[in-house]
Amino acid sequence: MRKPIVAGNWKMHNTVGESIELAAEVKRHVAEIDAVEIVLCPPFTALKSVGDLVRYGNIGLGAQTVHPEPQGAFTGEISTAMLSDLDCAYVVVGHSERRTLFGETDAGVRRKVEAVLDAGMRPIVCVGETLEQRDAGQADDVVREQVRAALTELNRELRDTVVAYEPVWAIGTGRTASPETAQAAHALIRATIAELATAAVADEVRIQYGGSVKPDNAVELFGCPDIDGGLIGGAALDAGAFVKIVRAML
Ligand code: PEP
Image (cartoon, rainbow, N blue to C red; front, side, top):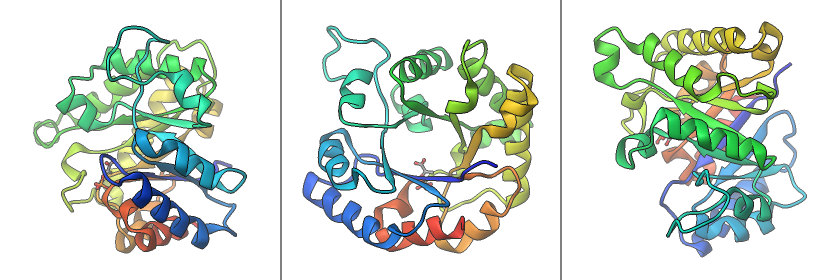
């Protein structure tokens, strides 16, 4: 059985003080939940404070991106060692904002996946098609290719990776994929992982849905057989909404 995982991606929101306040509020309301893995991904500047606050509890810490090189002259970047030093368990890799705004490529995503796994953390690999690609009937090919590029011949267990299906047209737009559309994409991703590894491994990989998940659509989406949780952007900035979304997975 796959343990569902719901992660909050706070993006470039919240000072350290605001992050502590938000994490503390989430922590207060999820203390008794152990059937869902809960992960908070604050901005880099708040990782230490939020990590200290959630340590020894049932909330995991995640980073929003990382540089694939172990160290060096990469001004402004953060390495995997720096993240694991702060007890990060997860790193979001290949978020569509990184791909479109910061030029992250499939090859770059792949290097990050390897670096994260090498450091003993787990990547949350984001994939998803744009509206143009969906309208052109290319959604399946695009998603399949992103999954393959990120995960093919990794030479290690894919069980430790999480994939997030995030149709770009649904991120931050208030437009959500219907449960049918999301389920079909998730089934495709699982089938692709089965081709890369085995059906048994694919059966263990958690696949999150992301894209305007809110308390009022979470139950329906999370009820789909291949949807194992969510990667939550906007609604994760509101503790009450985020907790409701976590509870929708119970
Ligand atoms: C995201 O940033 O990964 C995301 C899904 O954002 P939102 O929930 O705001 O659509």
